[in-house]
Length: 196
Image (cartoon, rainbow, N blue to C red; front, side):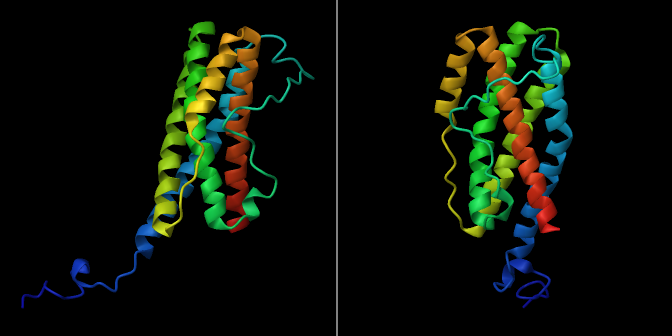
C-alpha cells in the first residue's frame, strides 16, 4: 500500500472526517457577505431618497409603509429564533429582494437615467443579496434543513403593477424596498451581535 492510500494525509480515504470545516467555511462566507451588505444598505437608502425629489428628502416626510408582496420586515425577535428557522426566513427575504431591487432599478433608469451611482448601487444590492442568499441556502443544505423561501414571481408582479400605477406610487415602492433591504441588513447585524 502506498503512503497516500488509506493514510491520514488523504482525507478522501478517511470516512470519519467531519463535514464541520466545510460548514464552518460556509458560515464564515455567509457572515462576511452579510457584513459587506451593511456598508451598502444605508448608502443605498440615502442615495435613493436623494434622487426622488420633494417630498422624499424633506424632514418629517413619512410615506405610507405599504406592504410589499412576498417580503415583509423581519420580526422583532428575529435574532433570537433558532438558527434553522432564522436562516429559512433569511433565505426567503434574500430570494425576494433581488427581483424587487431589479424592478426598482428599471424604474429608476427611466426616471433618473443620469443617476448612475444609484443605478449601480441598486444593481450591486441585488447581486449581493443573491450571493448572500446562495450562501444561506448552502448553510441550510449543510444543516439538512429545508428551504422554504417565498417565490419571488408574485412580488415582482406586484412591484411591476405599482410602478405602472404612476410615478409617486413607484417611488414609494422603491423607498419601501430599499428600506426593507436596510431592515433585513440590520436584522442580520443584530443576529451577529447576539452571536458574539
